[in-house]
Amino acid sequence: PIGLESAVTSLGSMILQAAINVHGTAAITGIAMGSKITNLFWIFYSVFESALLCFCAQNLGAGQFARVRRGVRNTLFIFLGIGGAFCLFALTTLDRFVYMAFVGNDVAILDFAHRYLVTQMAFFPCISMLFAWRAGLKSLGSTVPTLFCGVVELIARLFVSFFFADNIQMLFFAGPMAWVGSSIFVAILYPIVVRRTERKMREHDAKKTEKGAPTEALE
Image (tube, rainbow, N blue to C red):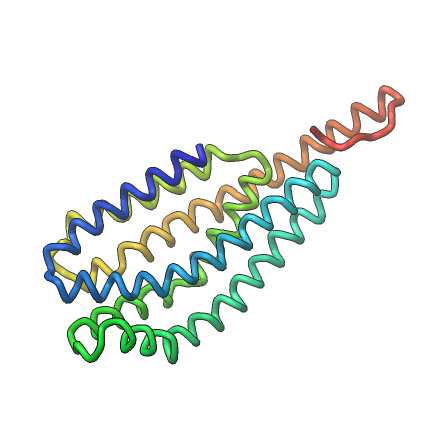
């Protein structure tokens, strides 16, 4: 499911890129430059997501479910705090340095790149929640729901690409719309999965206690 999720998300990005390509070289170049900066953002999120996956999975195996909850919550705060600082730095300093270094003074390209970056960064709280809660779901063994997160993102990008293909500003919102949709889906599903997993752990421990065996971690 995790591999399929990545493939579905990539498919949506390819379709969106096809819609962007009809708007000319300046739009393509500007959005590409803005994407390079946002890629730095995703690297930071991906590293913390991997660390959170290991942390939660290990504590789940040890039966320390409270630490799983705390790990997801604290990681979300880290995402919001450091992510907010990165957004501010990117929008005030980094973007202009990168643009001037690689595209010079082309006003049209600079305008597309900056507008794209501002649109993406405005929705960083949604992507923060998505990464944190999605990692929590994966660590609890719920990989199929994360596949549907990719499907939600695909539908959002398809919708924008087909119905707003002539409006470049709306195409900037394709990614954020995908994140908002996936965040809502995960926000509904995450507490349900957490409660279900906690209930299974309590039932498992109760059965072990009834049999007179020492309580072991849920496998």
